[in-house]
Every structure is written in C-alpha cells, then in structure tokens.
Image (cartoon, rainbow, N blue to C red; front, side, top):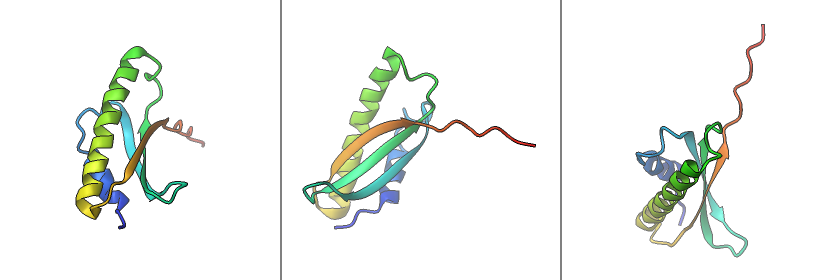
Length: 99
C-alpha cells in the first residue's frame, strides 16, 4: 500500500500552469489521524505576486488539478483511495551573500 512520493511529484511536475508560479512541489505520504492513507502536497511558490484575485483563481484551478492527479496516481499505483491535501507555502527568501 506504499506510494512513492517521488512518483507523485513527477506527475505533479507535468502540470503546465505550475512552472511560472513556483519553484517546486514537496510531497509526503503517510496516514491521517484516523489511520487513513494521505498524500500531503505543498506547492512552493514565489511570494511576491500571490496576494491578489488573479492568484487566488489560479491557485484554485491548480489545486483542483493537483488533487485529481494525486488521486489518479495513487489509485493506479496502490489500488487504494488516498486523500490528497494540497497547500502552498511561500519560498524562503534567498540568503544574502556574505563576504
């Protein structure tokens, strides 16, 4: 019943809308509080342009697409229903170079 997070990540990286908005996907698998299988997904995004209506609409569409892809991959690979939790987080600021 194991699901390799790298397989899920590779499928998510195929989503065409994603590259212009972000840096990467982070994926972890495990169980929830009720011991049901869950896939935790974080879209790591550049935080400068995400506080507007256009971002919210784009994120809603991207989130639906990501959930559908995770469900499909999980079902195909494990024959089990996995619950996808898809969220985003802002990328950490680049550290300044020191001399």
